[in-house]
Length: 231
Ligand code: ADP
Ligand code: MG
Image 1 (cartoon, rainbow, N blue to C red):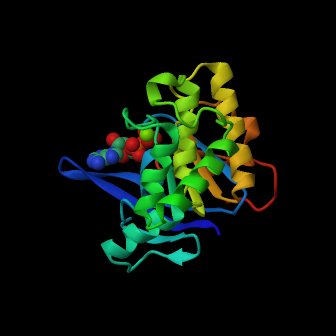
Image 2: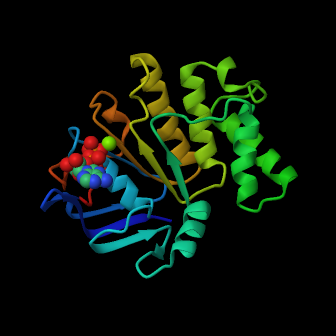
């Protein structure tokens, strides 16, 4: 199921006035599609992800996540929606130091109410899908930076979300590792049939994306698309 933003405007207070972080932004990402948003620092990329994740409510416009219209949902309903349908990959892995790779996933999946044994089976499958077979029982310090980012991605996918939101996944990695993480995200988008929206200021790995959009001063426009259909 898709991610859909329709005519979304978001402002932040700024001194006596406001700063427009998102200016009438519309975008739809289909299941199995990876859309990349590039743009300079301060252009509104993180704001876009926060709105898509339903962490911030826009001033106006509509946001539909995995087929669910979020306008009018109560905070409790929104957090259920997030837990069930949204996977978020932050720039920093934020893994728990004392937990093994598989435990990082089990903890989150268990929070969704999945029985522990089932969560474990599914977590092992997800780690295999991101290329971490054999490393399931390592703790973060026993993994490389690229592997930690893989665990981070696997954790976001553990609950089989409809929508995957990714903030600057390659920022902390060298060229080769960054390229492999990008490949992994493209592959996982297909394997898990998830609608992936990725933001980055890094223009290096964009060839792998199905669609590239550019954010400038809160406005979004198409840079390149593999498929017709525009925004
Ligand atoms: P990016 O992720 O592309 O760097 P952001 O979405 O973080 O851009 O920021 C977009 C604009 O909104 C910037 O001008 C930023 O200063 C402003 N902004 C972001 N978050 C806040 C906030 N919580 N309060 C006030 N201004 C904010
Ligand atoms: Mg940002």
